Length: 316
Length: 231
Ligand SMILES: Nc1ncnc2c1ncn2[C@@H]1O[C@H](COP(=O)(O)OP(=O)(O)OP(=O)(O)O)[C@@H](O)[C@H]1O
Ligand SMILES: [Mg+2]
Image (cartoon, rainbow over all chains, first blue to last red; front, side, top):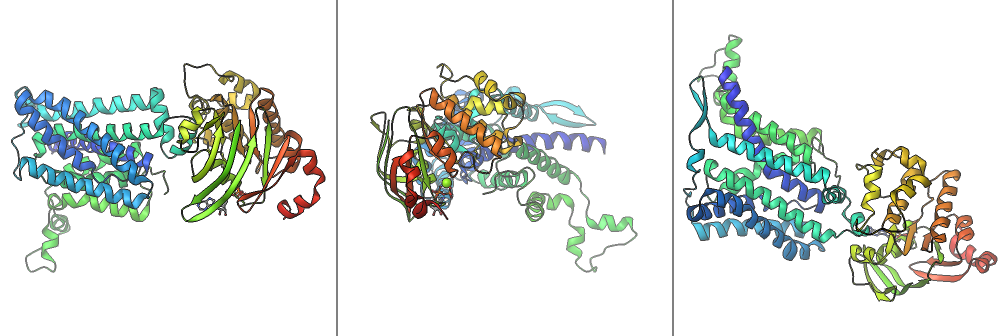
């Protein structure tokens, strides 16, 4: 029991911080430009593929460094030469544009790298287990993911809080036109934010690729959860996204670890469920089986009771 | 200094400004009057590039009609928006700092000057601007615009909804701004203030200028007031 809690906690933290790495860029972009970037997870995937290709020639660390930079640059160019042009036609065309980019990225990845999962591997130095507790291993790589996420998070926060650029970005969240009228180059800020946001997704992709798998479905695999995080936390709120990421990370890993079903609860009340019982399938479905549904359920409940999300500020 | 000629502005398909022309000279205070909804705010927002527009806008001898808001602002044209657009989550000090375009340049106004003029802002320097009273927020956005060291400042209804004492403070600040040689284009409902501080008056009606004249000429012209201002 105790080791289940410890390991679920750690795994939940790793997964949650990875989600935050992904969703922070998405929420930053949304709060500033009002665009829900449907291609965000696509950039995450693209970065994993780039990191793979770079890693087989130059090694893992170069992949980790360059893939997010390249993807960030591509993101900035997509904003500069695509989104900015579409912007004047309103939000719906923007949304459709990012949807198109998402589609394009998925096709591109399959065209270049094929449909199969790639052998994007961890570097040797990060193989193996960090410690063993009650006979179970905690991999070094997960600790590495944890550290990378925390470091990025601290850097992001410090830049936002302590630099002039960060101040301008915080002001531009929700009030970009006022910031522009004060003489700050808002189009440039948009482009950089978009680039940095996609680069963050790129970092997530480069570190997640070896463990979650580098395959054409990886964008849609995590993309859905990422939107849940952003909506649950409150569109446009970094703090909300952080809490929601950790919550969803933890809840999901705990749910997977707990192999109990409603029938077990009934058993405690001396009600025995058999195959003849009405709706038998529902009662014996274990929590771990429905774990993937839980985040979506959380989102629906949140939208019903608090449409703005945990910390949502932006109304429109 | 600012010469607007045949300005047309559009919100989507609605054609709001239909050929607005006026001028503001160097160091001059000019008021733009008119009933609600005639397009005064649209005029200044269009000049800043925040509304789709056509026509000619010459500032300091340079055509600025094709530029982005931030480029126009950097040429020395400032705007104080109608809705007291403080950054509510940021502190008073951060709001003021954001008014500075280039940290390396020293402008006519320093943050200390602002705090000296408005001790209430100084006292609340580290409070989120959203927590200030309406009057304090109005002072803050005006001071923030001044931090950018503009040559001309367009102020949209600064006294709307403020108590008489605060209205006076706003008027004093406007006079002080003018004293330092900065031109002002003022949009104001309260005629007494507009007349007291401005040299010339423009009156708008239905998306165009319907009257222009000196303040004293305007004061003696009851007909204009009846036709275009009184409700
Ligand atoms: N964002 C907008 N979208 C569509 N129409 C607008 C918008 N803003 C203003 N209008 C319309 O443009 C016209 C002019 O509005 P404007 O705000 O310029 O008036 P105003 O003279 O400043 O009056 P007041 O500030 O008292 O409302 C009005 O008819 C208004 O309904
Ligand atoms: Mg107005």
